[in-house]
Image (cartoon, rainbow, N blue to C red):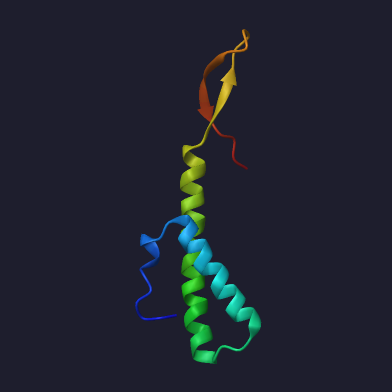
Amino acid sequence: MTQSAPPVGTLTFEQALKELEGIVARLEQGQVPLEESISIYERGDALRAHCDALLKAAEAKVEKIRVGGDGRAAGTEPLDVG
């Protein structure tokens, strides 16, 4: 990772996921020096946690539509997660 990598908290879900995928690929190749492996693993863990938090926030916003007896939308209710 370069010193100019943006703070994890400023990344969108898509940006964080793309960077995390790159880190996983580099680590899987096994050709990264140990110190750098540790550093990018730590960043990868922070990216994973950031993605998880963004997903949980999105799930909290998602609502499902209740359909009334006449087939029309009768309102919304929280999404059943779990």
